[in-house]
Length: 415
Image (cartoon, rainbow, N blue to C red):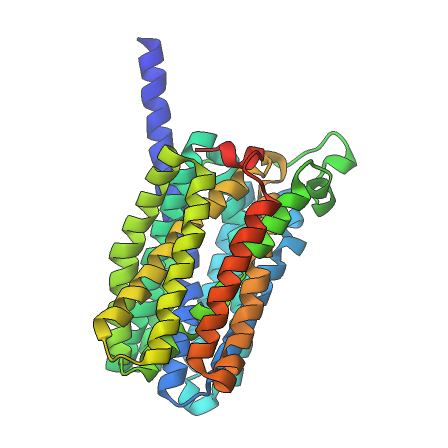
């Protein structure tokens, strides 16, 4: 009887953990997709060049570099409300304040550059927020819960795409810049209601027996298999920035309106993305991580072939264009589950945020570079040349990354 009571209590704790993670991931996703999805489309609608839109990828720089200060987040507590809860509260509150400032900076009035500058500050805060949330997830999810926990991250991201991307676009067309950005700020603030669900000792502070045991990047590199894991993270997503950064501009240039893109992004995030995240967790449980990630790389290559064909042939088949866009969306959500499950398996609880952040930041390096170059390449050789290049890089990235982290590696054993 006591065993049954203990099991039931554990189930309640797990449900609370999963709900907390879903809410926290939602809160971090709204400002991300405000800048990654809504603002590029708005910029294009007011005549901003493809090259300038491509440089929105510079906002990813703090996300890419957040591993540099991740050890400090693992080491220190800001407020006596819990270790990572203190970081989440302060960074999310600062994000809300900056978004309220952004409401007064319409691109029609101030141009793109001031918005990008403020966006860089928001990005810095989002990167810090992500370290705290990911560290909390790694420290509290068991090995069997990781895929499901990352599926919830995908679900939170999908909801963030709808709220920070699609809803902002709808509001922008209906009510303008100020109302749409203010709505994003309000939704970010509401995500703070999930903080009480976090289970953290308010008075516990990180402690280490020896100075060399403190969270640090050096401690990560001392472990066996660290370089292989880092190489995998750097190479696997080699091609994706070229396509993602130009996806919405490509849709607009092929006749879709901002409203069409809002509907498409909303449908893909709320339906395809959510289902894809859950399906990914199920497939990982059945087939294992290695087969799942390898198959996902093949599917990604086929998707990019579809984009290249449409850009080259211009068949005027909206259903085909919508189909490959939705396919690209589900692949990205399934990648969240698969890759982050691998990364969590490679992290240790003592520096959960540092280890996970280093690997997740590594994958952003080539993604950011591809995104930055995408607009320039599209202006130079057209969408068809850009997407053809992405196909080649997708194949190369898949082959090299799977060799860097071979099937026998312990990271693939998690289900």
